[in-house]
Picture 1 (cartoon, one colour):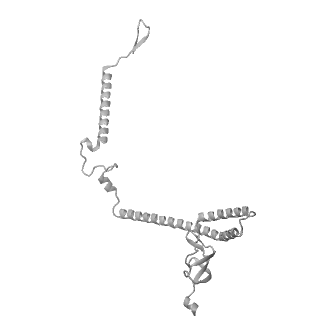
Picture 2 (picture 1 turned 120 degrees about the vertical axis):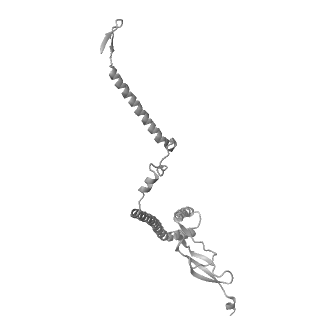
Picture 3 (picture 1 turned 180 degrees about the horizontal axis):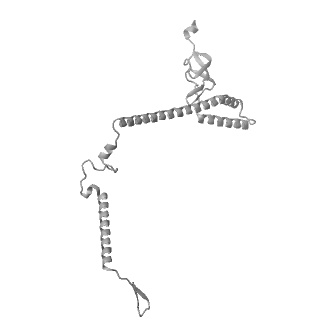
Amino acid sequence: MIRRKKPESGREIPISFVSRKDAEKQAQAEEQLAVSEADRARLLDEQEAGPASGIEPAPGAELLEGTGVTAAELEEARPKGKERDLAQEYLEHLQRLQAEFANYRKRALKEMRESCDSGKAELACKLLPVLDDFERALESLEPDAGSREVLKGVRLIYEKLRSILQSEGLEHLQCMGQQFDPNVHEAVVVTRVKEGDDGRILRDFEKGYVFKGKLIRPSKVEVAQVEDEDAGRG
């Protein structure tokens, strides 16, 4: 390398000399690099184009949609003979386990709900005498000036208790004027009447209740019995 100084600026300008042989080697290397880059680009274009590149794939060598394998490779990878029977056996076993677990889960949830409802029904049954006492207290208190505030307070407590029990599933059996039903009624008094419907309920001595459709206390009632006219003349 030779350095030459310009007279007007005073700066040195480097001047390099390359031999002809070195220049030919550098040109060959650049040409090979350009060829390899072109080949790489062409291969990438063919892979992205697929069947649209104009090259017909060999029979059975088409790539399955959404996969990177051919139909022949997929068929070869599938289990055969004993392996296929064993895989089917495992699959059926897993399906049975899944069905059994689903049934067990349903049974467990059902038993849990029934146990919870049973506990609530037992508690509601123990609170029924308290409701009866409140109702008797409301009937005995007269709405005069002295007991008006007391009556209001007792009624408020009674309504709150009854509302809570009803929200949990407690229902009162309506029986006045209906026909006697031994499944939900208990006859404590039978009154003979000259006319009317035989077996009609005349009075409800003690209210009956059901909890979520199940009877927890029958109604104690007075039942009418129509007199037989022929028996009366005899």
